[in-house]
Amino acid sequence: MTISATVDRWNPNPYVLSKAARIINAGGLVAFPTETVYGLGADALNPEAVSKIFTAKGRPQDNPLILHVWRITQAYQVVEFNDAAERLMNVFWPGPLTIVLPAKDIVPSITRGGLPTAAVRMPDNVTALTLIYMCDNPLAAPSANISGKPSPTDADTVYKEMNGKIDMIVDGGSVTLGIESTVIDMTDPSQPLMLRPGGMPREVIEKELGMKLEVPDNVTAKRSPGTHYRHYAPSVPVIIWKKGKKLPPDCAYMGIDTPEGVDRKKAIIFDSLGNYARGLFSGFRKFENDNVSCIAVQWPEYEYGLSEGLRDRILRSAGLV
Ligand code: TXA
Ligand code: MG
Image 1 (cartoon, rainbow, N blue to C red):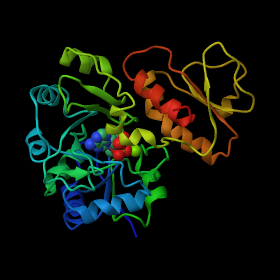
Image 2: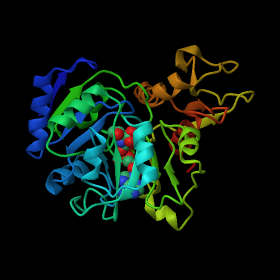
Image 3: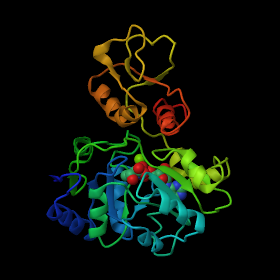
Image 4: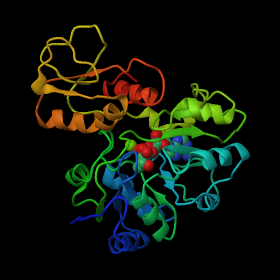
């Protein structure tokens, strides 16, 4: 049995959160909202608790987890800092930026997928921050979906996928961003790497660093284990639609522009890139439930802001990377 409790996103009920914290401190699993997607949290320093995350999600054991902290000094406990990484934390936290750094010995091997590094992030969500504050240790939390499925952007979706597999869901409403955090590797500050584009745009990170973020090549890709696995994929085929092209027949559609001849009953038209990002994963799930035969999604035209992250999720959903 999974219990579910609703909280006000700006003013979360402390009794609900202290119950959630007690479950986590005792080695249980609690799903909670962040600004990006819902996370499935466990005590990051408790290997038995963390192993339950892998079981509940069906996640490969070599795919490491992000450690969520409520303040920068909590990250000191689990990773080795360098000046550039600390500057990024000061500028961009709380926010959708995950930073990979050398792990301290206190971090169990299972939490970091056997790697010598660990990923840390401070979510920009009052409910998440208060919950982490109430817990004894940082929270290991992947997205709260079955491995390989799109990340959940609301608590009902978590409930449908995780009921019976986890102890509690804290329902803080729909998320504000809708795609996962940007993951960068700052292990070697002279060679910062973009491991996963996401909610924090590349250009602002590069501006603060005064350097380009390199894409990991085939050698360094070892440092980015999650990217080997198929992600974000609905069970219905996803096809990319570009403005000016013909829409494939009989497909449902999501995007900002309205393709000629689109069936409006099977279309979700967004009025901004931000709303597109926020609605992509829940749109996939809606169309899956509607039993459509294919889903056409618009390729984001401009290369700035959320576009890189959104393009990445679209390519992965379409099985193209
Ligand atoms: O927005 C987010 O990041 C959400 C919310 C819940 O915080 N979390 C999330 O977690 O997306 P997950 O597990 O679905 O994705 C984490 C990514 C994976 O691609 C994983 O391989 C990578 O971060 N990662 C974690 N630790 C790493 C490490 N030590 N080195 C390289 N990559 C790492
Ligand atoms: Mg995930």
